[in-house]
Length: 281
Image (cartoon, rainbow, N blue to C red; front, side, top):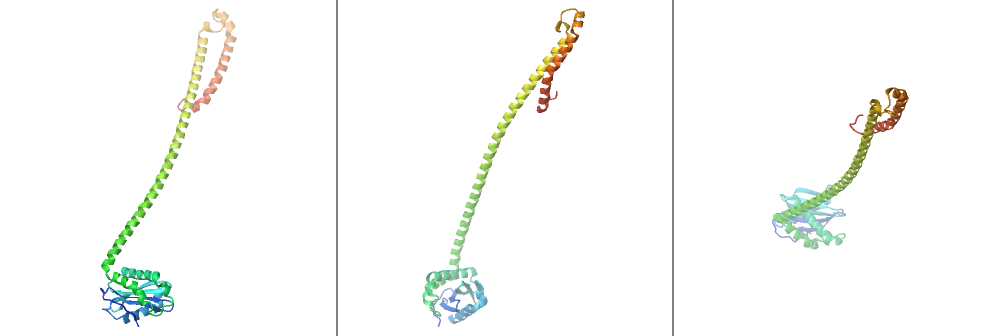
């Protein structure tokens, strides 16, 4: 015999039941909308659903027009099946929320007694949470408003989490940029020091080169002067004849000495010139 404690509602939620899968026994039923079909019809369909291996192979199912114009929805776990009959235009998502609520209350309050319960043996105890759940979900607009608010809260929560994640990623990027900036500053400082040292080295090379050039110029001028000006030659001031007789060998020695003097500066110039950009000797 079905244990009933129904009351007339809006007709959105008609009937709820809980079945034990192991032996296919309905251990609790609740007839909420008594102005509709009799409880026996809902009970018979609920028992067929519980006995169906095809239905049990699914975690959830929706059977439209199972009893008159009422749809039958179910959810299962490894041990129990939770069944609800609702009006044909009742939102499916809301119906599964009803089953989820019944399942949670059952697992929290009555699961310990369910393993050995007889058929309809827990209808009275389960009515304590099945009836309030049916009343709550019978008012679809109220439930949907709460669900809408909860959905908005979840959306805001997700948005905040995304913003936090983006801030963390941006912080990591800023740290990477700071590290790169420090590296660039260090490299720039090294480059500046190297450029200063190179400029100083080039300046000293140029100074050395110009000193050598000036020295060579002086030596060349001296040679020219001694070659052109006879009184300036070594032993000069006598007669041309005595100078010509005495200084032929002297001039040769003078030119030899001058060539030796110029040899070393010219070698230095040849070594220095390739390092000085744009200078041609």
